[in-house]
Length: 119
Length: 119
Image 1 (cartoon, rainbow over the protein chains, first blue to last red):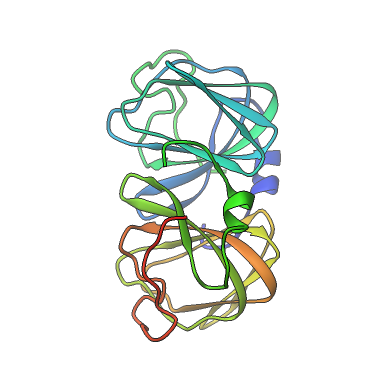
Image 2 (cartoon, chains in turn purple, red; image 1 turned 180 degrees about the vertical axis):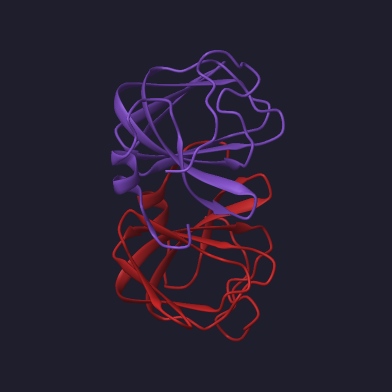
């Protein structure tokens, strides 16, 4: 992982939605791409903010008091401890940045939880 | 800085090259956009990796042993302690992520050093 990364190329390696693939690291953070379609699960991360940048499509990050709708080229950082639920009507591609070891489902757990993996 | 960020909109607020504008934070990291044209200065950051994602244009990150050429949608993380010199032939737009307090010129200092500022 010491070479450059084409985000589109990495996205093409993802077989399903909500299965992030790690494409690199910065200090103790993981850089991951993920495809999102449909509704994820409400969750929060008590120990970290959560970075989302939309690469393709449109992402809605539902918060308890509002929706944040991100188009391509827009980013949003969910503050630590804030419940959120990502969802998308169409296949949407996202760059995620979180500390290594951060669970994709945060405090919610459940069947959508996946192990970290590099692609 | 608790709303979404359009990277293109933020880039349009930058008046010159090599003058990063902070658009958000994630934990103790700053998210900044910068316009690059011409050659920057050789420098390194002994305490942190350095994240570059090209939003528009083409960025060459010169390393002592090779050049890394990034097109739109490509990212590269310069490892801590590695000397590098960003440069671009055309006006190139980049998303930078580094710990707050990281100097843009690293150990080199000099006249290209700028203070952190939000846009």
